[in-house]
Length: 311
Picture 1: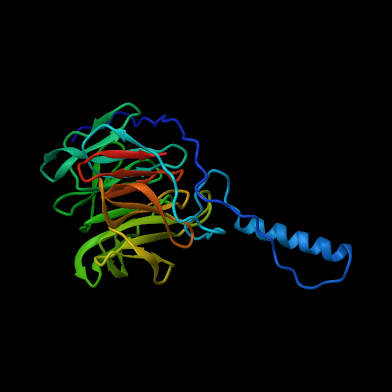
Picture 2: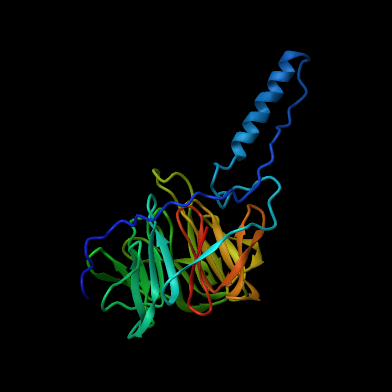
């Protein structure tokens, strides 16, 4: 395989984030205390602490584990078409997004693998895949048509052991796969230990990973999965917690924003929605695959291989 020229950081304009969720002022409940100024001061302090503990930073979607007050049932988002024939997409990086796709010409092993330069797609000659995701370094992992797994090193592809059908990478670098062993719910679920794959209970057909905590601290990857019955679940560190709704694909951004491709047919594929802390808020548009950039905005692949960028 040809070596990729030195990896160029993408200088995409950082989009001003729309406020996705309305925040109502929160007032903390206080115990009955002495009258006068003492009671007033205590009530104000409790109210401030309550609001601070649940406040979502301006311009960001709430993290996956943080419910918000009065969650919206729907949100507005605009879609911009990006050129190319795309079949899957992965977005990584932290400070600057790195966009990689599977699409274009059919080749042995799947379809061509390309990355976005800011103005077009650069193809990695000799590479092929059917599924892709991207880590915080900006480099992808891919799955081929034969279920082989490869990691991009910056110069070439390094094959990793095992077989997979789908792959998800968290902003902390944790890598999870949907394997090839049939189990209830779909196929086996495994996580990368840096040398091998560790089995995790359960079965699924699609996966992406949320990384809890501060980017500068060690974090535990928490995958979200979709199983063969379209049920959505989230790993809590020891077991799967069932979430409301149904989906066909799922994507999680570095900031914790979760987006899904649902099961309701619409133009472009199936409905799109985002997690509002308690349930799924409907968004316009349709797709069949979805990924989320570090700021929480979705990129959707439609059923006719168009790539749409949400803003």
